[in-house]
Image (cartoon, rainbow, N blue to C red; front, top):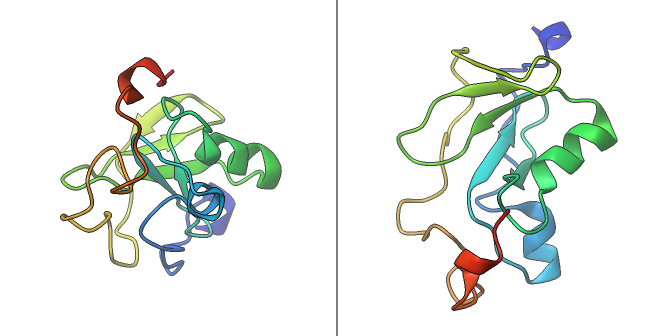
Length: 114
């Protein structure tokens, strides 16, 4: 499935946006690269790391990393679709707030989303 941009054996890179965590920043929602497992923040988040990962690597497919969401999205076509099972976990921990991470989200976060 590698030619489709999906590698079911790739484990998630962590429980939050890898770049935001390094920067001490926050995110709105999380997305998982279906090819390598990189966890990035969504396009509504201030830093849009999931899209930046696609542009930097060419990995075209993401899956939501939010609880109770199992959709896939292909950057090449702009379409949502159903895909195969991926290595667990398939979402951030339930006790991790959205937006997150806890303690990093500013009070005016709604004014800062795209």
